[in-house]
Length: 351
Length: 240
Image 1 (cartoon, rainbow over the protein chains, first blue to last red):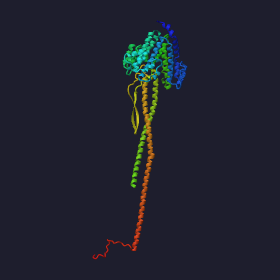
Image 2: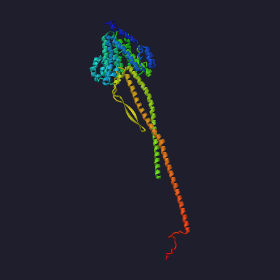
Image 3: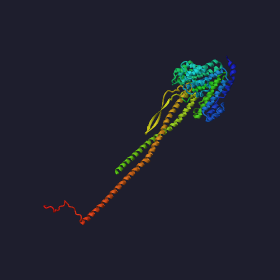
Image 4: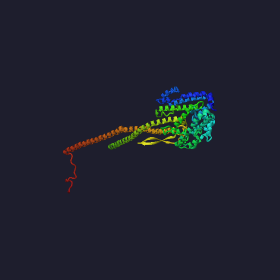
């Protein structure tokens, strides 16, 4: 169905694509970052942000200005834009948006679960959930006593239900460590998202699938790196690797056997995409960490997504780039407020 | 009277000696406490400077971790159950003053081992190390500060006692002792004077009776009584 994207995409989604491209043009440029880095106080930062697309978003904040307030306001702006896109979307874009929010929903559910298990009040937790991951059954979480009850009563209604079913097949939810649960859910989510994009076909598949494959492999590497020296067994580790990535069954099996960073690097050497990435990792605090390298690669791929038209991937890329921008601004703001300027340039440049 | 006063004097002398010994001992205690106090003060200053550095480092590593791992604060707060680092209180004795010393120990496993498994695990590990160092320093600082306050109290009390003994008790005893000695001297002088007076009076009386005797003898009223030892013929004896 070549060419069908150009023919039919704009009918339903053209307005939103135009809108998101306009928003993308408002992302902070290198010049903006240079200005921000030279600020002495958070007030200066606020003044500089006023000249950008952010405008007067901090206008009604009382003194003193703190980093958490800046973070909160930026997130509010992002959520506002996201909700606007979502409310105006039609199928299949709305399902795409739902998939995007599943990631945040997983975090929220894990948070509420751990709170409910400890019999803590759910009301404060609701305030601390990620707004993009809100689902209508959130308030009902506190009626459940154990996680299995929670699942049967509440989570069955949410889009997360199929992911939970994958986890529940081996052992019940009660025994799972909360972090292991989180990662298992994310694995099923990534694979489901990948399948959705592939089935959708067209440009969306061409753009989103590499991004999601990279995300899957990145998770595999990071999980391996962080599980050195912990109580996580090799099989448990392997169960957390999303399989939709380029590492495929071979690479993942090799990764599961790895015991230190060198072995991981050798696994990456088989894949020419990841070889340079792992080589770029410096050691200790002087060089870049693996996470930084992966972040840069993710940003590159997201920016490239905008070079093609008529696909849903622009929305995903835009959201991720905005989040990275938020992280950068918060990082610069923290360095300024803590007067620790040595590493202020370690943000990830986007444009 | 005099032996009782002598006893009182001995008692007073003993008390003076006791007070002086007590004062010297307390002064030694005060000096020992002051020495320890100065050491602790120096240590507190060092620790506080170090603390500033460590906390700054820890706060920065928190910012780094947040950059990579996103916002994990709610996760951490929600999964709190038992304390991993606990404190035991031990007692240390300095010149009789008990000072509390806090010692930390680890208990239980790290319940946050798998946090940040998918994102930011390295930064989180660094963060945990930095804050653990900060907690250890804080515990040490707490011990030092409680010792400081306790020692301060103890030094004040001891110095107060030393001063009291030196400026109140000892002068009082010395004054009493001086009074006793003066009293004793006074009585001795009185006694001496009394004796002298009696001797005088006795002498005068003796001279007076001798003069009267002489007068009577001359008048012939008073003969010498018979002297059995004198070899005189007795008229009543016929045959000699």
